[in-house]
Image 1 (cartoon, helix red, strand yellow):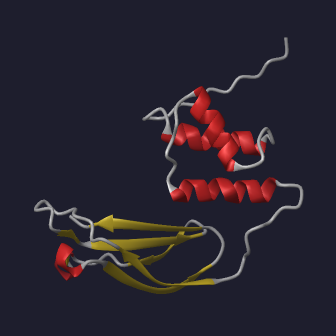
Image 2: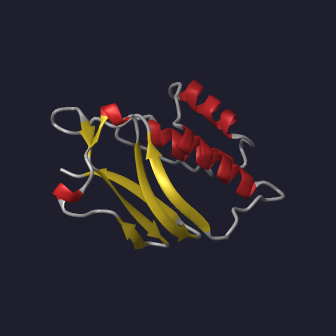
Amino acid sequence: LNVSAVVITCQDGKQFSAMLLCGLLLYSKLVKVPEDALQIFAVKRAPINMPPSQLRYLYYLSNIIRPEPVLPHFRPVSLVSITIQPVPLFTKARDGCRPYIEIYNEDRMLLSTLQEYDRLHMYTMSEGKVTLPLDTTVVGDVVVSVYHAR
């Protein structure tokens, strides 16, 4: 008997499991498009409302593994600013936030806007949105993390 088994688990039992399983179905060429993989997951486990960013990564994977791959470019990209709308309500009073950003490029910190708590701007709901200037250039593998200072 020549059988292989894969065990996939995650905290909520759906979100990350769905992402991993759909990626595996695409990579093994059992399906050609992310929607087909999501349909299999919905039938076998449960319907999932996958966030746009995760669905985008499934499309990236399907583009890379197809017979004529569409590879991501490796050109520098300018990050001018990040806008968050509406303003997240992360303070104890639930009236706004004090965001800061860390940008990692190829596993090294490229930028951090963290400073003393009192120097960070307190964005309130009445402002409608948060716009944080970045003015930095990245290429390759990039992670942008947004935090709330406490």
